Amino acid sequence: MGRPLKRLSAVRWGELSDATGSAVEIPALLAKLAWAGENDARDAIDELADRVCALGFVLAEATASVIPFLMELAEIPDVNCRVEILRLVAAVNSARQWADAAAAAAPQYRSFYEEKVSWEKKSRAAVAASREIIESLTQDSDIAVAAVARQLLDNLADRPGLI
Image 1: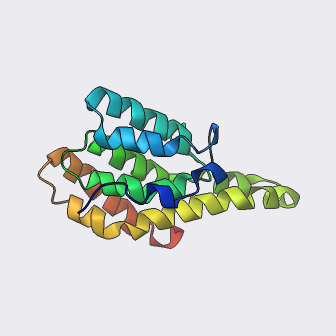
Image 2 (image 1 turned 60 degrees about the horizontal axis):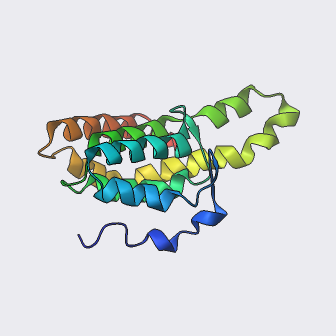
């Protein structure tokens, strides 16, 4: 598999935003999630979730860029919080806050949501691009990881046109 997160520096995190502002702290959180002990990893996944999927359903510009790294970590048996990682990915895949807000807005205001709706579409596309990883995780030796992966895979199958 190689060294985890080696492609982190290829993303221009400082040019992306998360729920707190600049996404510049995301690489440190992903690294902490990858290599920290259980308590620190839990803190990292909680903060990461607050930044890229606020309140469990509001996505940010940086969200789509985080998904491949989360999926990479979910594949590594020694990484702590793999269930929480997959739950975050599932929440991202289900998020429709901006699309719903755009649909409910008066026609003259819908264009104000276009960029944010694109964040949701890009994020779902990133999850869909990880389908092979998700499929492999349904056979994981950790039954909790396998169960969440199956739920995520079912969600992908139930909503194929929503990418």
